[in-house]
Length: 314
Image 1 (spheres, one colour):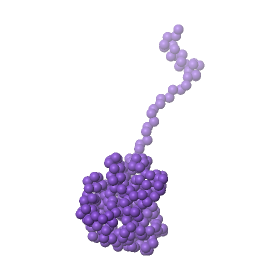
Image 2 (cartoon, rainbow, N blue to C red):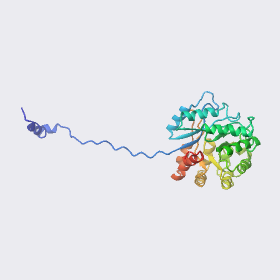
Image 3 (spheres, one colour):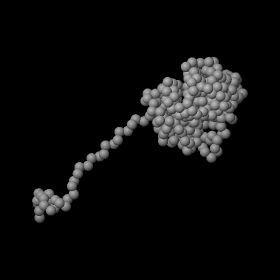
Image 4 (cartoon, helix red, strand yellow):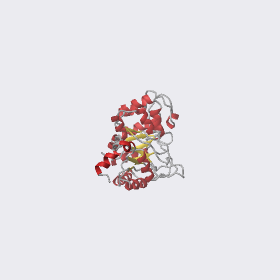
């Protein structure tokens, strides 16, 4: 019998050595360095049904979609006016969703201005919602002129309670004229209320030279000088823009060069939003931001810092 030393020598010499496979040291592969995730607050989502009765977006499905797209928190907006949606979405539902997902969902509150309540009662209602966790009012999407006395009463109540208001403008809901004179009347009357603009009428107003018809659609082509948004942001400190929906995407994508300069110029007044409201919905904002390649500090303000300040989250 071979000794241990003889056995080892036999394996490492002669023909036996030829039959042994080479032994190569192996090391665990170095894990790729992951880029830090962006912190995103989505200022504009809805839950429940919107128009299609077969499509319901639950709070859980919304959170799952947020995870897929790297969104840390989302604002859930009620819709309480008959012109705003086929299926009303109530404040209590938004509050319940935020309570069930306190680290992910943020509730807003809303009431139709035509509800028959006096101003003190309206203040009491909105204040109660704020005490339950509402961080803002909206989506304010009502079939009245933007500065109708009933609308102005809502703005007065929100200013007194201390909640920002997210509004929709077009030719049917929150009605205004080219140049947004009715919105300007509200901004001037309620300087302590932060207004957050959204909708075709608002985002069409990034450009000058508009007709009344332009306030209901998605105008194409190069942005013309004299847009109401720049004028109002120059003049009033309490107006912001919500980049959600097709209208927000179109305002920037229609003229990417202008749109990029606009976002950099107004970096302290713009918040990220999607208007995600139904399972399977396409959201163009993610691709838009990849194309824009904004400076990181500007991008982060739009993605979350501005919303964080507006909603008193930081």
